[in-house]
Image (cartoon, rainbow, N blue to C red):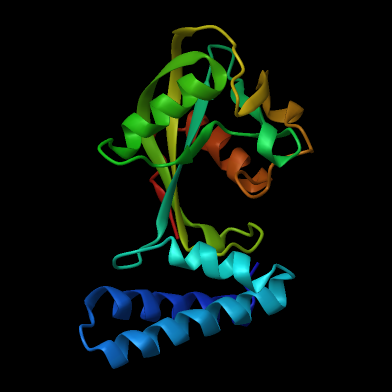
Amino acid sequence: MNEPQWLLWSRQLQSIAQAGLTFARDPYDLERYAALRALAAEIMASHADVPTAAIAELFRGETGYLTPKIDVRGAVFDGQGRILMVREASDGHRWTLPGGWADVNLSTADCTVKEIREESGYEARIVRPVAIWDRARQGHPPSAYSCLKMFYLCQVTGGAPATSIETSEVGWFARHEIPVDLSVGRTLPHQLERMFQHHADPRMPIDYD
């Protein structure tokens, strides 16, 4: 699924504006970059059916050179070959792989293990990285942010199922039992299928796109 052109344009305009507001020193240039950022917010809001003020506030919260955000996901398997999933409370309690935005001062692997613990109650260890995907090329719904998604194959090492403020249910699923009500902004059916393939074949190379 390709993202709409208006979204690509508005994100690009925001990126240029944010870089200009970060590095420019001339007051007139700063004024122009601020106007460009406002235009980017207006374009996005007009197509996304979201108030312009909300998008503008979102953009103003971003500072420094704009880079893609990093989302990490842990594909945790148990001894029966089942994959661990959690219900995401903020997305209508739909199912997803445990994960979230990468945190500062932690590696992406450390973040993945932390997210698994916090969202499911289980302890896990990283087996290997298996996918590095551009979110926009995977078929997820459009987003205001450019995002890099990193998937790690993991093995459960302990703990017990426990929900959190972010999750409302924890479950293990065989390949033919994957729920249909997925949090598609986070995890897609073909990504889950790919995780099962990586689990079955340790020789598979890392996916990237």
